[in-house]
Length: 115
Image (tube, rainbow, N blue to C red; front, side):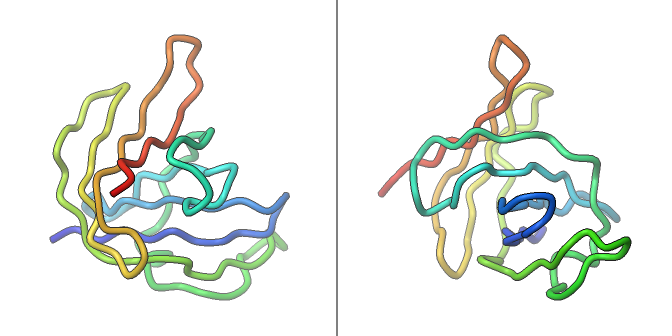
């Protein structure tokens, strides 16, 4: 099963990086609120990250702050469309369906089905 991680990242401001393993890289979004705070969170797509970050905690090269794993586990890919990615997370903190959805204006949001 592919893996996921949610990292607390303190640079350039406090945010959470949501990574989904896709082969040798990870699709990545910056979540602008803690994933436990709300069922809908503004998000920003980031360039693919190295798979190394699924297990990494510590300083990020180039003086880009530090990361700490907030959650991790495996996921099932339920839907993979350019504007909508749906996954079932099997994490230590989050177990359930998450949708990354691109809105009509191009912005992204994390949608979590609260159980």
